Length: 176
Image (tube, rainbow, N blue to C red):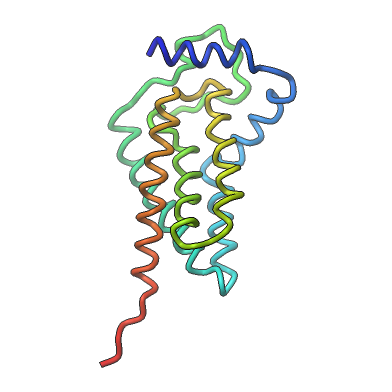
């Protein structure tokens, strides 16, 4: 925990600036409750040629919700880093749930890997937003570095699984 606090403190000391102080809460806010990723899945579901990718993203987000928010966060119950720095002025409202794993990061990477596994070229811009989202959670001092790493790993796994599940759901039964 001391090493992780040192990383977060280093970020606060060396990376904090007015531009990022304005940008990071906005970027992080795009993923509050998964809104941007749910919107992405919904839009893809509406486009006939992209429905498989949309279903992959939707399945991945559903698996992420179950694994991250229903199982892991309550079970592990890790305290957020800002609780150890009461003197730090947060740029966002303090989240009320547990810290591990980062739900913002997990949802973002779930969609990235669902799109990649489903063969959509949209995984590249999604990866850019996912990376900035993961960084924002550290910059805002609301997650430990290992929370973000776990979110990336969880998102990768449920993204792949979501795409495989969608592929199974979309297979047409053979006529006999």
